[in-house]
Image (cartoon, rainbow, N blue to C red; front, side, top):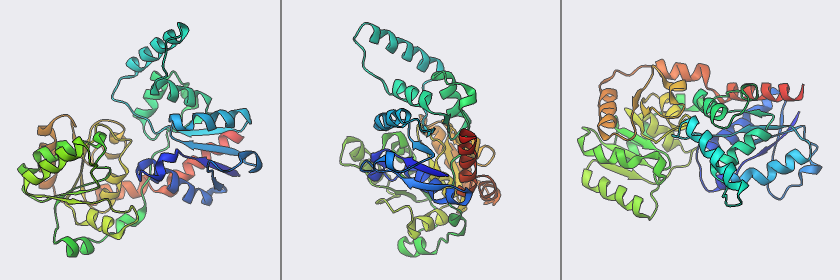
Length: 343
């Protein structure tokens, strides 16, 4: 089975969860009778003799190529990677208002309508969580039969991570850690920094801040706290990043939402205790294994961190992740959906 893979061009500049999901899926999918082809804007899809195309991201960047895929009659799988703090009923109303505005010739397309269009054109929609699936079903009015949840995964190598390199490099161990897109306001690092001075352990932030107003606020809070160590972004394959996970006592992901937070899965696999946003699809993966927090509440974030710091270290989360969320397992579930489309 020859499958083409399409991702937004933006992942070339942003090394986030979408990039990881796309790369790891294509890496492990070969174990399940799939020959993957990474499609670039310079490729002529018509000459590639593909059986199916899998698009990552229900974004406006992918509208044009999805239209071409459908015009060619190729089956389409879509991983939308979508979540919103808006309820499904709100999304549905917003789409209705937008349709009416187009009738009178005054409409501007919203992100919701773009995602709805892409989901409707897909033969199968592959959300990462049950919460994402519910929003797509109820908000975009997509048939439940068209939706199949395929979870995100994590590289098993993080289970073997050692704290030694990070501890020797920075002289730190058993700290509170955040690693990710620090400059993205959705990641909500500013709320963590607001309570950092009330945490009786160092707080390590791995990720680069932008030279904007939000970045300056974060830097000022870090400086005032006195116990915050800022480290520029580390490559996802860096041994130092894996070592940071292993050296930390608690990993915090205070985002506005996550679907579901691959970094938290990596840290949990390395042995760190997890404090994570209650919003998005996090409970599918971490329920019973993490402290859930309200990302709008500094008090909730601080309480969750302190509770996690007091907990004993356990292998329960590590074993749960290894059993359910390896990339090989994710690739197998994905390949099964391809076979169903082509049957």
